[in-house]
Length: 434
Picture 1 (cartoon, rainbow, N blue to C red):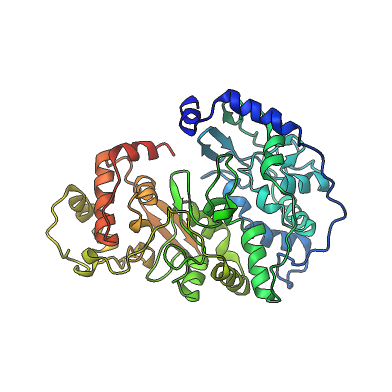
Picture 2 (tube, rainbow, N blue to C red):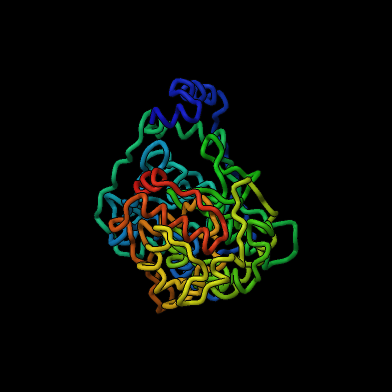
């Protein structure tokens, strides 16, 4: 904790002073009468509130964050590792003791849209900074669906945070500085599909929470919206319309297939947190909502925060190779490891043999010289269920040393990205704990 503060140039005392200073600006802000929602998040053909809530809960990706691997749905416990400690997701099942079973409608709405629960202020790991744009009707539909699910009597885990971050009341000051409670406002356009895509991406899907870099206060840097950010060791890439480092050169079909299936032909395959979003959320969007989201992403402002990844669609190593034989005489340790453990699935020219998801050609992950997501997927593997298809890559974290992970990562970056890899054994060591 102290080391991180020193690196950021902040002392604990300075943070306390800042919090006290912000106290002068803190005041209760009446929301006023609930405005008529300009957009309903659920398709019109869903008649009951519970049906709407189920669709909305999937679009908002509630299950992924509130369910641990192998755990009971919605029971919480998932760890979010931050530079200042670990936050654990809470139980949002219908359990009356540990979950939301006794919460009133107003309490639930307040938690989702203001970050204030019956137990106090929430940390913005819960994306109320995006959910604030949701309509009350949509929020209560989600609550109706949650209450229709089996209650899980699982106690919430205590967060592991150092001072002053363990003081929930201090979030009042963070909110005063960085949070603005605002409902969704349609874009300056009469295009209903574009506006629906905006609601899906910003209010429900909260894409910016992962893909937008954070400022010193860990709030989203809206000046670089969707420009890409590192999150728990993974790199969430630029998804703005930037033609060099974002989605500007992707076809609508590629974006659509990526959102629905976790793979875009000739581009990328989802892994890690994004695979969870595809599995639990995006694959369930209707075709109409999928297209609305595609349109919105294509109409975002091109953003660039200097950390973007330019994809080489014709890397020399892969272009000179066949599926079975490499086209170079590189004899590095990384190449040897790839030959023994990776080439059978990914192939030397990168299209993937077992599944299209094993394709490496055109992947953002293998074009990142820092190898952030690449290291994570080598260490931890990935798993995703899309429709009736199981997508799986085993982890090599227990098989490879830090130096071996770095070596194979740098080979992959060079061979399939045409770039000089910068991964070090020390980096791998640090990422093992993320």
